Amino acid sequence: RKEVEQDPGPFNVPEGATVAFNCTYSNSASQSFFWYRQDCRKEPKLLMSVYSSGNEDGRFTAQLNRASQYISLLIRDSKLSDSATYLCVVIDTGTASKLTFGTGTRLQVTL
Amino acid sequence: NAGVTQTPKFQVLKTGQSMTLQCAQDMNHNSMYWYRQDPGMGLRLIYYSASEGTTDKGEVPNGYNVSRLNKREFSLRLESAAPSQTSVYFCASSDPGQGFLAPLHFGNGTRLTVT
Image 1 (cartoon, rainbow over the protein chains, first blue to last red):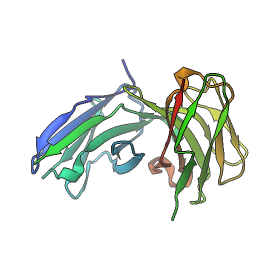
Image 2 (tube, helix red, strand yellow):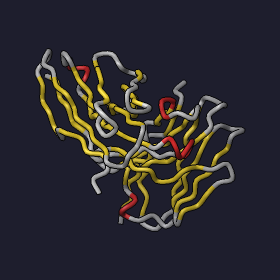
Image 3 (cartoon, each protein chain N blue to C red):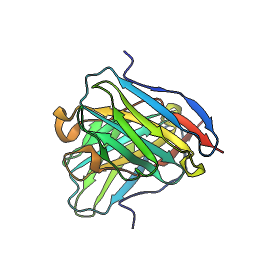
Image 4 (cartoon, each protein chain N blue to C red):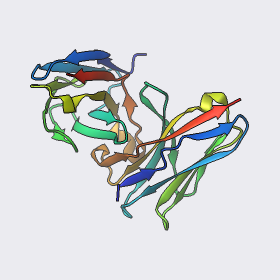
């Protein structure tokens, strides 16, 4: 089993739709979680951190479920500009050397 | 505000050739990293430097060497390129002083093809 798994997609959704991605992780001791966004042929950029209590940033909501070992990203009112690959990132210790990236979920928002 | 700058953006090598990928950051970050990204594999850590003067192997270090030249610069060298090293390479930096939530800041990437 991979340390961090994501559905590669693509998720094709119409503009205005709500879409959710999950990311599962295998190490129950994992401590920190993030979502990154990567546009085609560009570098990854931090989208948001994932806190235990869940957190929201505008149209984006991140949740952590430690019991089931997954994190989720919910995007409401999808925009064309949301089209990208979303990478989940899991850190097992306090150093980024143990930072593990998922392979990403591709989202395509259409008119 | 340059952030993390990588050069070159593209490179084609023949098997056995050598090259150095350059990376510099202007954010005064202590930690720097080299990743490679391959289809279906996710980003994998090659080497990292927790602070100036230190370097450590990551998940896939074979075939690579690194140099942390100073706080700003962290280079990645391929001594004898192989087709398996065809990939997109990203340099990144972070400020561990922010603790667990320190985000990685990535450079624009280098697309390397080894024929």
